[in-house]
Image (cartoon, rainbow, N blue to C red; front, side):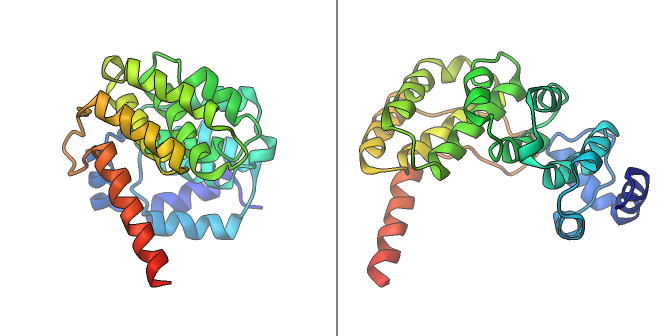
Length: 229
């Protein structure tokens, strides 16, 4: 198994100044090598699962190493201490999204949604709402009532929440609206009542989609694919 020192040296060699520049436009700090996601995915395929290595890479504080950590960590080995530690360490939305992707695979996802969607911290809150969107997309067992409760929270709180939390909440509305026809209707009503969601995306070309229009466009696309099939 590779050591964290060896992997960090490999990451350093794979990084480029141009990719560093791109990542920094998206809020990543100075501790970054600038490794492309193509190279990170190659490392992931080679290493597969290595939970101890993932923890060591996370502890390095390097952005690329932390992204790789979220890919190779074992979701079944995750506990409250690990997830809460990783979330407390977040400082940009790129790594927050990676942690949300990992946390969504763990057995603690619903517990963390409950805690993190209520958090005042920007990155903790954004991860919590990203997790809710993931559940809406991937967990068919949950009742509509579970998501309707969170739609009500979004409707009442979104404009008062922090920047990236607003973006994640808006994405959760979209995910809920694409879950089934009943939730589609509820999400469209909520999106209309919420109105435009303003998010500062910094020096990037990213935009926060209008939830109602996005839901309707995606459903039209799905229907078109079904007709063609």
